[in-house]
Image (cartoon, rainbow over all chains, first blue to last red; front, side, top):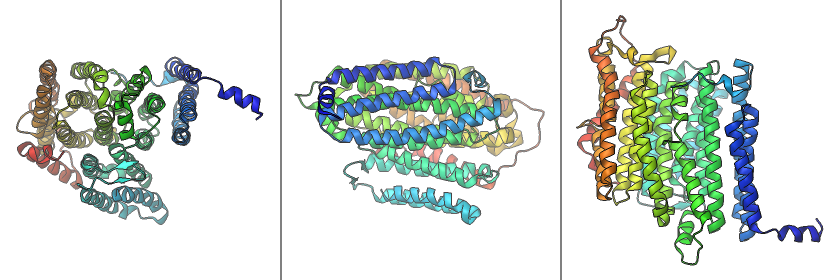
Length: 110
Length: 458
């Protein structure tokens, strides 16, 4: 990366990162709450986790402390494991119902 | 700490056991391993070592809770032995459960937010699979999916909270965070409060407190009964112990900011769960709402912190877990293959199998808080703590809601003893389950007679 670009990136104030990741996180939350397709819901959960990753990396650079970036690796590894299990559940549901719409999951209610 | 190695080794061993065809020997080995880990944990008592540059700390609080978790896990394995033996994937299930236990031990002994996160995830990912272990059953699929969705949604909030706290304090270590919050030059800012509240939301999802409880009854009902028993005992203990540890050690300096919020949530949990439980027909759902209600009673210890709060909480979770395990064991035997029981399925149980009916009655009475059983003293100590902290209104409300609780527990007891049913064949109970029920019965009574044994530990 050339120096002008990296200087420009370092010039971005921390607040912008906080607002950006909060916005991404809120988009993820709204997606989980409003979308009806299971795959899209999974993508929105990933979006929430990646908003957290961005925030952690920004804080880590701001504090000059490596721990935040290590935490990001933990989150990535765990998110991968989680999504593997989630997709397996989705495949089981699809085999039983031939649908990926959460409307089919309404058998349990009080 | 050595217990973590033993448990992890045990989990890996269960995975390999499939290849070497050790299936028959697996159950005794798992039992021995759990006993070994409980003994190793007790040896750590009063040492208070921390490991891996202060990632895990086995202080007395952690040792007490992880020993409790190992013992309850032992009871749980006795309860579910027959379920496992009729199952083709027995080694996988054993491995998942044991890895979940490792996660639970992390959750009660963490001293770094990274370990809290990893513990919760190790526990949860294993449980998403276990909840869906009846693959052909759409209810089990739905339970598994709802659990997965709510679990990862809650994890998102928890992580966002952790990130904000890291932003303010530049550390994940519990003691360093507490120091940074206390130090005068720190801008105890909106970011910090937002972080604390977001972490609180994430953890409240995990302990299923109202208004974050809506997943719990569905998941508990759809999952196989043995898995439900695991969720409502071990998962609950671990999640609550993690919650308590975080908010008493790390966030106690900002307690005025979160106590009021928690009081509102406690009140909601107590009222909503107990009132909703009255209208349920499925016994599993009644037990699910009762477990939400018990989360409310446990939350009382957190909003009224005194010297004996942690001891009272420890006693409460153990009394609750033992009574719950035996209630679920009876439910498992009564429901049989179909794995589904409404209150009417218990009609005339006292004639069909007096022993099952008696143990169910004792465990429900303990859950309802009738003296002289453990559940009564558990509630009594929690109310004492709340009185000392000056929350008189909260105590009065909690007493009223436990009276409502008595109503729905007695519906099952009345069905067992006073109603008759056209089914007359007696129910055969496996030997291990009988031993388990006797143990639970004894523990429930003994804990009720000698409550000081556990209260004074912490």
